[in-house]
Amino acid sequence: MSDLRLSIAIGPYDRMRPLVDGEVNIDGVDPQFMLLEPEEIFFRAMRHEAFDICELSLSSYSLRVARGDSPYVAVPVFPSRAFRHTCVVVRTDRGIEQPADLKGKRIGIPEYQLTANVWARAILEEDFGLRPRDITWVRGGYETPGRIEKLAVRLPEGVVVEDAPAGATISGMLAAGELDGVMGPRAPSCFERGDPNIRWLFEDPTAEATAWFARTRIFPVMHVLGIRRALAERHPFLVGAVMKAFGASKRIALEKLTDTSATKVTLPFVEENLRRARQLMGPDFFSYGLAENRHVFEWFLRHHHAQGLSSRLLTPEELFHP
Image (tube, rainbow, N blue to C red):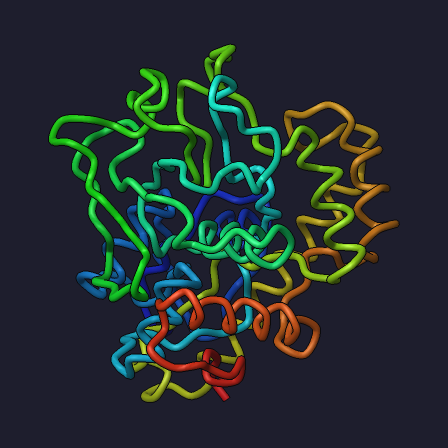
């Protein structure tokens, strides 16, 4: 019997390279890899079910699972994890010295239901008492106008989300002073250009995230890996084969990262940062699997539901293939 020829859409991460390069095989699968940006993968997956296997926004996927109409079922492989204390940038001329000062401000977002924004709002509420309804949210494309939510959302009473004016971008509005700040998974271009009027909300996001992890033991999950549900039902072996292969690929990536005689990433201080991460988080700091990350999903799903995104409170087990 020939291998299944399956389309697999993932980002170009080091933890995926052994799979893409053929160093690791998925048992019984002839993979057709597509290396795409997350925004394109998520939109095509949620709107058109375009791939057989792909990374999924944890927020969008949770929303669909709660609704009972997800075309994908996830395995506990996490293509992207990231601390989100860098998610908020603010103008320096608005009197914003601490998170509580965001109350009453206008904050730009690319989409309300983005996973990074769920995490950031949850941190602001739990640690600083800042509720989503305390802010006016302005939705639009970062650099290209007209971005919309991938999925329709019904937000709690009192939460105000406005659309950016036609033709406007979030980055442009922030630079022009028409917004007080921006929240999103990547900084807008005006921040990256070094605009002196724009800074991170947290003066030292790494120190904030380190202290937060030491207290909560949570390393936020951004993306999960989804398999088309019909495929998983038709080929039961596929779920285990995918989990095994993606885990092996990540282990190889970590082994290569550890070889700092010649670093594998174009970044200084790799050895020092790797040592700090292991001291703080343990040797498998980028862990896959539900058992090791149950508390992460419990925390996220509680806030996802409280923010009005999932229609009911999910359990972590509901997200993943049994």
